[in-house]
Length: 215
Image 1 (spheres, rainbow, N blue to C red):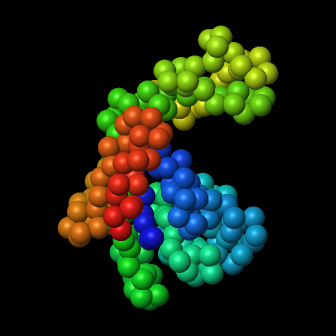
Image 2 (cartoon, one colour):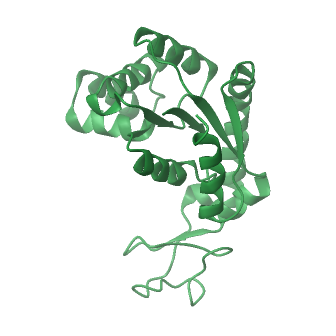
């Protein structure tokens, strides 16, 4: 199984990707996790990435692709892998295609998690986090017993800055501006699949399995 999972913030692709990776015994790689791990280990590429991150700049595609290459060359990825949220641009998709050609590997599918924008806003803007114990709630789908209070420790819940509705709308707009060309690019191939990622976690996972199980 060699998959790319794409979807906007709040689409659930990370959660579903974790389940899929566990069931099929393949690693799941998210760009942020790869970056943080390389920086922590102070690898040459990790040090390059850290310079850009410390300066508040985007990490260049060639550095990101180098890190992805290292991950996919790991023995654990020999039997397959899941890429979570990568590539993000057509340039990265072209780079990934070249990288896979080097290994004589082909993707099985690119799965896009399709969620209506208002549903995404509910998921993200409704999120509340306990600053003490880290518990996460959603005022719409998973509220605490007492409004604004953590069930576990009684602390007052907080809204993260990037979960405020106006910020969420900006994040989604930027995501779609960058991703629409990528979806068009993959849409010209036979790789692109769409999953309507609305419903319970189990319902969405069943939809994902209906795609992954046919590969």
